[in-house]
Length: 80
Image (cartoon, rainbow, N blue to C red):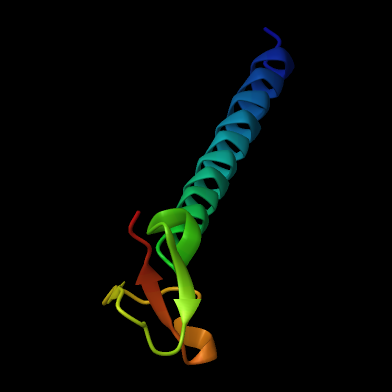
């Protein structure tokens, strides 16, 4: 009986399983990285339809952290 063919196929299965596990871990890490980027500073104009001013003159400022807050300004909602 030859067992060399069986050993080679088992090696291929083990290597394929390890490769699949590595791909799943990488996919999980990439998805979490993208999700964390999405939860960062929001764009004042895109997410809130506003502009950056300091202070808001007659407008309503958002309470969320936006790209305006890094410059010491407020994200003022524009009406009209």
